[in-house]
Length: 281
Image (cartoon, rainbow, N blue to C red):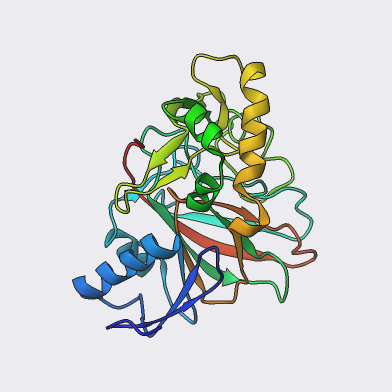
């Protein structure tokens, strides 16, 4: 469909939209930025093709949507703390993003979103899948919605970072795992309301959510396991095939995502910048 400044092609019935007619490396006017933000709110993820984006222009584009989020578990792991190079080399046995997750939800104010740019892309494999958490919430029964109303979940990075997680072995993208690492732990509502659309969505994920507030992990586990799997049912998902110069900009509030591990003998390198968000309510 045609917008006033660019074209939008919907990717699927569950979400995602490809925007054409915009060069994000340029200084975009406020109206164009507002329309991109509107498309993000409407479709959960927006994609761009054939972009030439160096690191500084990548960060400049991200700043049009908010301050850049500095990831606490990657501080000191590269020269520029505002950038994460998501790297997978041939022979890696694990990789970043291998489970369905929402980014960095152990933080009191998780990122609004992330802007990922394709640099070295395999000829096949390494797609990213997304799951629409508005649809996941809408599909719950009335009884489950009533049970979850007002319930809060505990989010922690203990499963994905630090020495006890053991994630650095076998992968090229490293996180902090030294003796100075400390767990970050916070609580968020299980069902949050999007601050811009006003819609309710499911807000738990396998990588970071470890239990419900006021319950043991054993008591929490059966319901959490159901919610984790429910949140990425096939009818809520959509898939993006990467090309060199592609950008995926996802709303970290309304989606989960997963990187597929089928790159085989090929290198995959992407550059990520995250945008600061707000406290979930």
